[in-house]
Image (cartoon, rainbow, N blue to C red):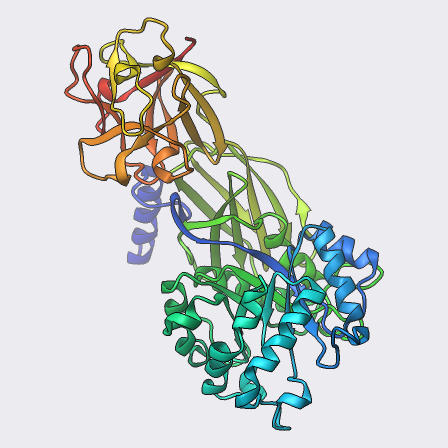
Length: 537
């Protein structure tokens, strides 16, 4: 036997014995939240009015939730003719439930030098015109300039507009986006972010990726802004290689804390980039973005996942509509096996949807998830979206008494009080409403626990992480210290952990039989005083 043979044999034995992983592993942490997602979309700039068939494919089949329109520099309130196509596109998009933002490509001639850049003294007048245009188009966000770095705007021009012109837009009740530079150049946004007056006017920091910018825009995020990629494209609408590049671009943006991804226009005449034709026919790149847009809905939250678990495989994860959504990209030219290990939530099954050279958002057979783990094959050059379809272990929605295993006593609100901050303890059950709890699934394995008497939530005080943190009642506000993971420990008992600290759980302090022993938060150790049984009241 050669040395190489011995090594291969030893590795095989170790793998069978469980000492080595059989598959590359991706760890998904449902309780570790990242940015909020605002949506995915494209642009109708210079496209005329989208046909009904195109709208149905983009906004229905593919699930796009954002539309970028062009503010024509020739329009005015007294002459809306140049605006009419985009006014109609915006109205149709709003009727379908989308959000719409508008961008001006060229400053009207009366306020520019002739080279495209804005005259310093005309910022207020230009801001008034933009505000009127935003109202005419009924925009959710308004952007003063497409690619200022290509339109001769200096960094100071942008700051001057933000200081002296943008208030017209904000004062009219419209949110503002900026700077949408060619290479997502932070020098266009940082001066405004770093000034208290202008910072307060900014909602979205957007940009394009044609000359860089694919990184975490930390200053914008530190100032509480959502970061959007608002224009980019790849030639080859039905080329799987171009689809892989698009999918990787979206994955990278999400991994770098972007909240939205907006593809370039959907113009039938541009056969190199168009996603959806006026006939409603969908090209492969449309299905590629649809793998994200259809399942990761506005308001979803990205959660932590191993981004690059093996060579040329990239994974992002989200909680959308209460359910876990995984997007896995395999850029390899051959299939690979990928294992997903899930923590911080309970998942019973997932439904895959797949786009590859031979598939277009094809719905595949459901996959059962055992012990919060599953392994599947990712085809060559494919995008697969896995959507949680069941939460696995956990109580059915209903009203219960919660009995701790160690003493047989019930979870109780001290003194039957209803004041925020009232301690929770254990007490012999006597059918009182302060000992009854309504448990409701939020999806993703998480539940609320609401007191029947008080209408208030079981709450871990101030998101405490120390052993002994107070467990109390508090008005429900959707905080992660009021959402709980139920993990079966057998025999009808559960470990109950707050979603922000899944290694700790609700604990009857001191493992005692004493009436009134408090319920607190403690690191899970498997004790009977940490196991609770939801039973009929």
